Length: 120
Figure 1 (cartoon, helix red, strand yellow):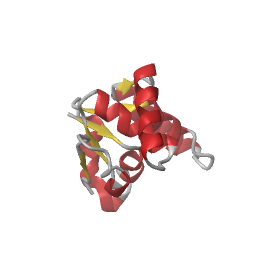
Figure 2: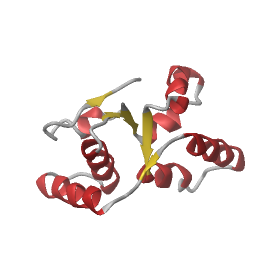
Figure 3: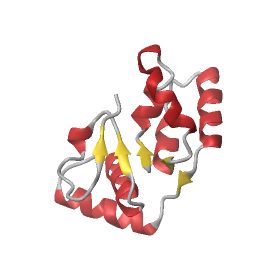
Figure 4: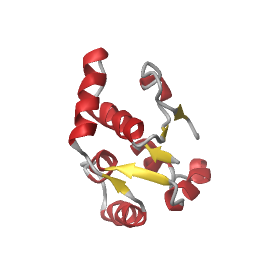
């Protein structure tokens, strides 16, 4: 089972990355509330893109932002400089025992026990 980083959702509809589209409907691929925030919160999202991503999120199980996730994200950030978003993605994947799917695996390799892969 997998957690999709925001960049996977963003790349998936692009012609060069169509191989990612099955992940968007796979019930074993989850997203976090942080992904929903990052994708739908993009300030240059047009109406068609917004509609597309809202439909994607309706099909996905969205994992909540819990106190446990925040506490672990805090630990990750205390151990090494990392963005809030990356720390929440990592903590969500870690807590739910999911493999994090991201294009930016180097941002997460310092976290022992976190399963990370790049499907691109």
